[in-house]
Length: 183
Image 1 (cartoon, rainbow, N blue to C red):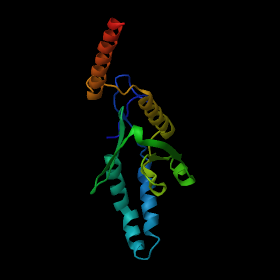
Image 2 (image 1 turned 30 degrees about the vertical axis):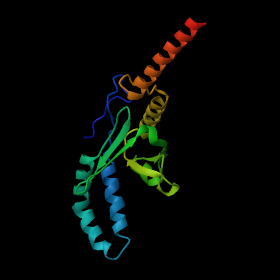
Image 3 (image 1 turned 45 degrees about the vertical axis):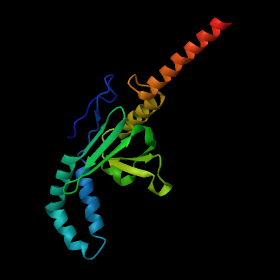
Image 4 (image 1 turned 60 degrees about the vertical axis):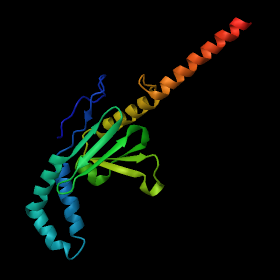
């Protein structure tokens, strides 16, 4: 599930899939193991975690990671026992933040955080993607696709509003012709 398509949106609006860095597996093992070691109860669990359970979990977690962007939205999916899937419309994305701290850099990783419209400041980060290969380029693709969507004409030939507007335009043309005929 971690395949990739070209780095730019294809002209036929193909889906772009992010590819995840396999180094996310040891990063997750270390991150979760260190969190377990912060409590006395977690120390024995951390030992079991570091002896193999963590590597097993990280491998399966990595295999299920998926992120894809189409012409209208981004969909992110992860999880083993509980699967989390989020879809964010591109038009709702306010900002995409690129985060790369010293620990993430050590594993050659980074995180993309999405801020969407309609959320308070405390909930601004709707979705976080850690481990995308070439995250800066993927971020640029997202922002470019969002801008293209915002500037694209939103009128569709099958749209009911367009039919109503055309009907009004036709009636106005008829009225204009009648007024010209009377003048």
